[in-house]
Length: 187
Image (cartoon, rainbow, N blue to C red):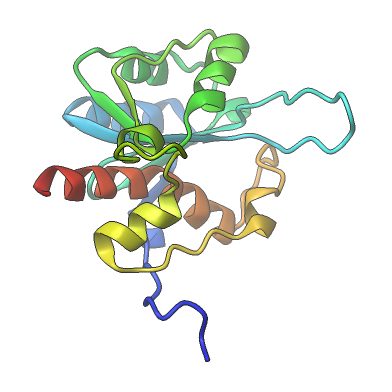
């Protein structure tokens, strides 16, 4: 018997994910993102395994609209000025889950200070003591099971060639909070 009878959350399709790799890609992606009222937001960092080792991340910045996700590999882009402008915009709401480390790393490693950010982990807990995660939110709002592979989450996000599974994982990490946010507003 299946422990979790909920159907799986399908997530974003690969055709709707843009791996941003050139200045032209950055300009096109940021033009779409700048037109949005709300975007999904997350980052990924290469994990550290040695005691006392400090992360050099973020290595990937993920931003999503209702229709597309944009993945910005930090080490491969000549500059992040356009991404910084999106993240620091007071007009565009950025939503995500568990954004504390993401924001701290963006500030300390890249000098990006995200503004107008809503951490759904706290906003959705409805008086409960513990933060609410993406899996619980997807179950609550969509009646589906979000599968988050630990094996994928702990891969090398600094690698210059991400796998298809990494790309889909990262894109969902940015788009899921936006979809949850929209469902939460509809109440």
